[in-house]
Length: 120
Image (cartoon, rainbow, N blue to C red):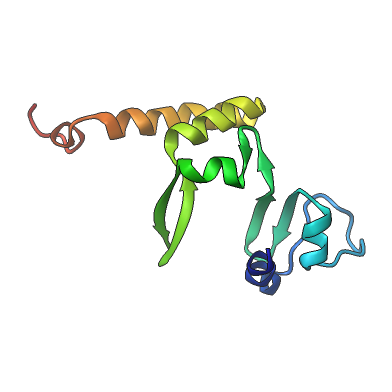
């Protein structure tokens, strides 16, 4: 939790959709008293989720894969688990993302010569 606070602090996190000037302190205590945070930061928007449809961190950890993003190794839900959690959330924006994620899954399942346009 402390690492999350430290990582986001330089980008001035503020609750997304909150009126300007609302007293908000981004620190460990705030995280301890909350569960899910939808934030606006100087780089854009980020969601810090303590729980998502499908479980909490400990339950979802075995369903993670390691990816390198911008030179940093990160744990990310595997594609099938991400699709399941988005389906369980049931929001319209999640259903839109599911279609894209299923297309990615289908593309990844194709033999490599078919993906590159080569003859089967």
